[in-house]
Length: 498
Image 1 (cartoon, rainbow, N blue to C red):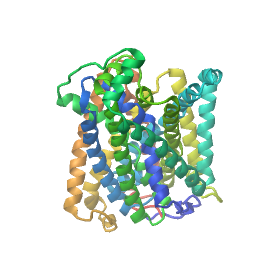
Image 2 (image 1 turned 180 degrees about the vertical axis):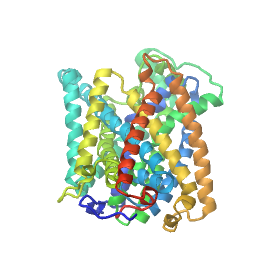
Image 3 (image 1 turned 135 degrees about the vertical axis):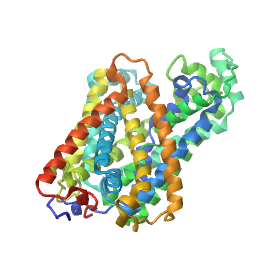
Image 4 (image 1 turned 30 degrees about the vertical axis):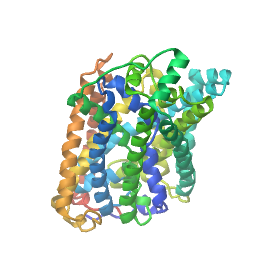
């Protein structure tokens, strides 16, 4: 059955996002303050990784690159709003496409709230480093932190509603500022060496760099790579904006490639710069005793002013996550509603701004729940773990979709404009599916074996509950579609109008 035009049709979206705006969306969704923390705190989270952080990071990049190739292939053939949902529902299974993207929407929306909540301590650290102790204490107050996080979040909700032009004018300058401040870390890290650090440590604290050895263990290496893989989550936001991209068949795959390569290179060089100056043995020892960051480690060789600039860079990196991730999750909701498996009202488009304003507002509401949950629970890592699980599943589904597409929906295959060779597609998708399955097993095992206070602190169980809720929604809505006389199987093989 062909889809009919409705007032809520995606043709109301406006294709205004150019290549730079698309690439910035992916880059800002991927880059956050984690680069300032994760490559160093991994010495505590994965004891024994020692000097092998950079090799583990390179290994983590491999499944991410393969998943990105799958996204590029599918986005060239199906450039529509709601990217990953559209790809899986049209190329594999509408059920898997919805439940997986629903868990993705839930995980990312909660993560948006988590990010909003942890931005405030970074701002507090900047204020404190500038000597404004009273303001820093005020920012530490519970209601102040929550209120400012909510204000910050809803500022970017408004920016998303206002329109794509304003979105680009906000995001792109912030991206360049983020890179400029991050470049301070890279420059400083390669300007000093470990002898300079040892001398500074001895002078300031009377300590010497610990002498440790850490033999290579593949299990430890694999666990670290699975954790570092989270650094690459976010490039799929480019595909979610497929209904608003200019020249989408070329722009979407190109933007995905730019985002993954840029972020991967940046993360690697940033981490290498810090470890060039700070010995891994010192990082490992400090991580076991306290929370550490790149600014804190480099503060031994940098002046206070440069340290402030680095902390500010981390804060801006976090802030950049918000507009891009809001765009991503809102377009998922929009695509569901347009397909009729979510209330049709959610697909309403602002008559002047050409944005799915109700989907943006609802996503902002779920992110607000993430802020309140982070504050009340006192632990925001649960939301991040749920996001990682859902994204691993989504990346895996994209690789499987590339494999199944010619059989499931052959008429879409002719529109693929990148990696047209079927053998190359199968190699990329097959290897990607294998590695992503391995990472998913490692991540899930780590979560289920973790010692927590209650069962609901295991992100896997929460993710399964979310998937169960999504299943109920899907089967309820599909039943309604069938009652209306719709041929559901054929319906979900047709692409939306836009």
